[in-house]
Image (cartoon, rainbow, N blue to C red):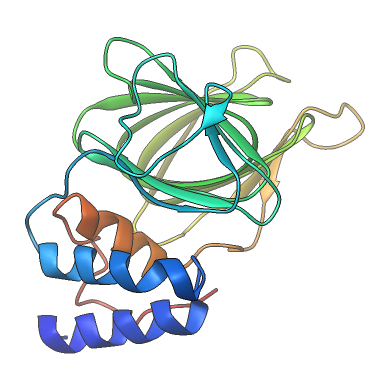
Amino acid sequence: MAAPAFRRKLLGFLVAAAALGPAGISGLIREALAAGATPVAPGLHRLRGTVAVNGQPAREGQLIRPGDTIVTGPGSEAIYVIGQDAFLQREKSTVSFAGEAAASVMRVIAGGLLSVFGKGERKVVVPTATIGIRGTACYIEATDRSVYFCLCYGTAEVAPKAEPGRLERIVTEYHDRPMMINDDPSLPTMWTAAVVNHSDAELTLLENLVGRWPPFYGKSGLIGY
């Protein structure tokens, strides 16, 4: 699909989804689509509802630094960029960053987070597993005992806490193996799940913010899960 047509289709999906609400989505769409191959500045790019960084109200343009914790309240959402990585944090979510580079270690404590990553290794810690990822995108929904993990594309190694020593290597091109990772002894540790609660339009938006296109660009139409 030619780039202008693809961008028009992306715009239609984003407007229809209105993920950030009428007041917030139009400016971010313009920013992402205008950027093309040029990354936007790092920091918080769109806030909706109640968003806090280290317990203080967040503000647009604020940088996310090592050690920072971002919390979204009910009906709230945040989009932010750290280096080559971009994130869409859902409502009622808590995410913290640590390490020499803010995104080298990411802890999804609760709630939902859609992430796209540049080159290099990252470690994602969730309540039920530790996940090593490389140059990929993923969507996570976390509770204390169960975590939904979709490796949208790329490579990951999943080490479930319920089975010390087990390491599951996953390689996907297009949402090939979403899974639940469980910490309840009455249930299997990991099992296949459906693709839920994230879309190709959102992935494309995040990748555009950091000057990239997702690997499915030109290979398929957008899916609005």
